[in-house]
Image (cartoon, rainbow, N blue to C red; front, side):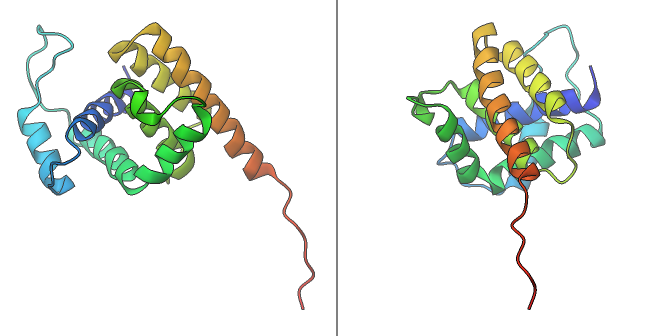
Length: 162
């Protein structure tokens, strides 16, 4: 597993916790410290509990900080694509994987190629959710990535300078 993939998995777990406890007021720095201090690897009980290396922690925290900074705009983008779905009806795993993917497509300073972002989001969604949830996430992220690319490639209106 790539280090970015592992960092994305940690980021989704953190976003999941934040989403489940929206009324819990605390600074992100405190949240990160509590998360890393108390994390338990539920995926495989045979893996000894240990903290990920600093570069993985930093990338995870960067994603979470970015999602938190753009939370409302990200949720609006989800709502615009998930027609006939209220965002609160979307499963917690799917919703937070979408948030991570949308942050990386639209807002991250260091952008990975969109197919990589989408593929990893789908794999993470299947890992923590279901196969069907992977298809749901793929459909939404693919549409948003196409919209982003179309906006980027849209010809700029020319106006003569005065």
